[in-house]
Length: 241
Length: 241
DNA sequence: CGCATTGCGTCAATCCTGTTGACATAAGGC
DNA sequence: GCCTTATGTCAACAGGATTGACGCAATGCG
Image (cartoon, rainbow over all chains, first blue to last red; front, side, top):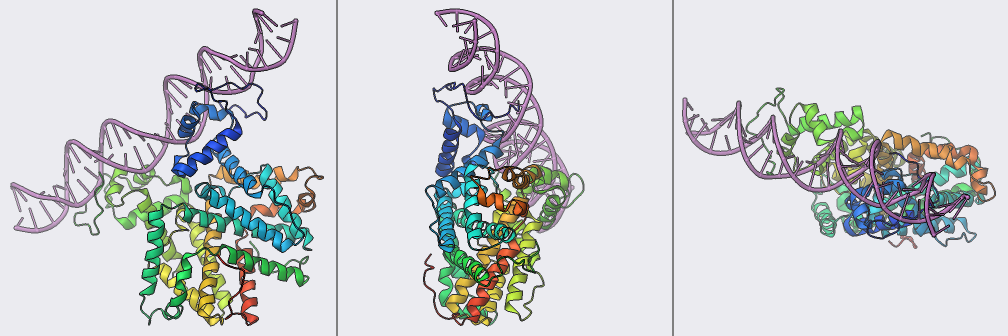
């Protein structure tokens, strides 16, 4: 078939069950499916069933599964960033972006797992990149540095948020068992062969918590230090990819 | 069928092709398959073909695909950290750990994407935590801070590496399309509504690359700054999880 | 109002997965 | 050499993505 997906629909033909399909409706239904029954519940067949249409009808709206996934990812970004406006303090604004993105991911933990590392190349993502890059430009970084540092920033935020979301998406039983088992094993280690872990034993309980905010804080500290030290425009050695 | 997987084999029956199956051989073949033909080449059927046995024979060794993936992941961790020994410079040593973990993940992207957010609580992981925490203690951090900062460090490394691995695990077609997006979609934006992106247009091509090393560098910069400023032992406000 | 066009929902088929129950056969203990 | 049983093989099932052919009905036009 491989019909190209048109941008605007002119004819709206109801499905067998009377529902009018739309890109938005499909994405929302997909998110609902994932939220209710887990990411493995997202299949073209199930989505078709949930929408009351034939699975193949979805190919009129999306080129394939991947296209649908990108649309879902962009939707999450859009919801997370809705209503955000920079307030003038670029560090605070970046932190706000980070917190919003993480909240958006945690709202759809099971979808976040496969959405975090994709380039959606859609409206909401583009807007977010525009915002983030402009914040770093306002901090005094030159274009090349601002671009790379935005990438580093957003990758840290996205990957960290995805990790939190993935852990959150585990079955509660398994999640709690993991947490408990972690503490138990690490509390009963031999002191001679694990001196460091024995030293910090009292503090190990915090290992089960998220490190998201601390990671963002450390990153922003480093960015602020670079901006303040006036190296913002010069390229730095030792970071070849 | 759901036969339980025995720990030690007593009877070794050769497959049709004459090969003697074993857990190790299966894991090694799986890793070879992924390495040679990409992550999507790993399926029970293909693995059976590569081993010259019926796909269902694998269920005598692993409860299912997940069990197999975890066995693979365990080997990856062991291989990545094999032979590592701290050299005396805690910043350089942490960076070395980060690079090793990432290399281990990227060598086997599909398995890595699955295993990154799971707590193995096994020997290799315990050894890594012991090493990392002891490095931060040697930097002058007090136990509570050393523990939290190690968690922040390793979470950043793991999530970033997992993100890179997940991207690497994409079908080549989608991977390249995502990369091309930075060249195509993001190059043709309206200048009026996207001033920042227009300003940095020349640098956008780097967005397709990994930001792993820069993220690690920034994190280590912040850690070194905190250690040097003597705040290593005092608790810091504003980072409540 | 009614006809022609065609967008798009439906159906059926193809080729992939993972997984399992039944069966057969060879390994090892006796 | 027999008997038990581990284990490899076979066939089948359920469910996945995708697509070509088909036909209904919504829309534009007269």
